Image (tube, rainbow, N blue to C red; front, side, top):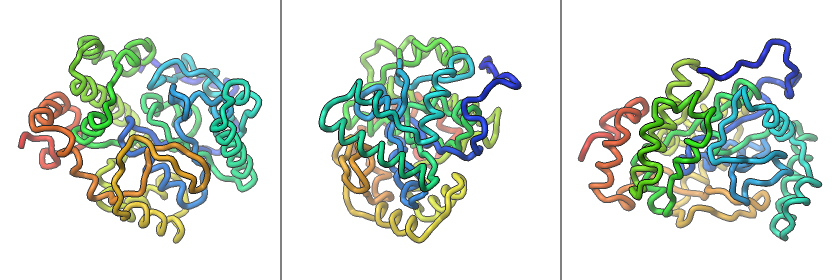
Length: 340
């Protein structure tokens, strides 16, 4: 990879910080990042930070949380452009909130409530020596930078591509592939093999194909990073956690350097066995403070087959045809990759 390495002896924004200072939970939107992040928060050892790289406000564009400008969805950060990012995320990981910067930009009653929530959570987190847990699907293509430059423990969530596309289809979401094409460093380092494919679909009207290709190129890049640097990222399949949440999260707590407690176990069981079904993209919650995430308590096992309600058979076959080469790195033929 052409990415510039951090020069030996360079002043590091995060020098002196322990290597497990922060946790990043990432993966494409609708891959379970909010669910996983909230379950990791359940043990009371982290401060949950919701999508600071989301270019939409809320939850993003909040300089109190991340004091720098975001230019693209799926912002790519590497050694060639990271000076301002390292400084901004250094403050986030240290739980240093910027109330003046926040007030200069955001002034609504909701923004003031959010300022109070994050300002209080960051201050309490510093006092109690909690770690920052960043839940941000828009950081997925910068996952290696978070691990290497910031010393974060990085969990990359993978969701079965047919279920993933079905979720986007249900919500009416569209993939803007120009968010990837318009980042030269991203194309240079990670996505150059897929440039022609991305350009061919960038202005297409086939939105299912666009979303499927977004999944394909993203998880191809993640797979290649993992092959080059095993152990840098922890790849976590959504389906494995949904099938056995208690055992899966217990292991994930260990991976993230968190202590598995009775409190965490009880909250995870309650949140994954509740017979509720999400009906929208976002949920408002006042439990533990004002927040806007895609997490709702659910029956995690029942959620696995929901794609059949969202895509017809022709659409399912179309997705399988577009992603089979990359999906085979994460799922076998018996896990829904072969035609019905």
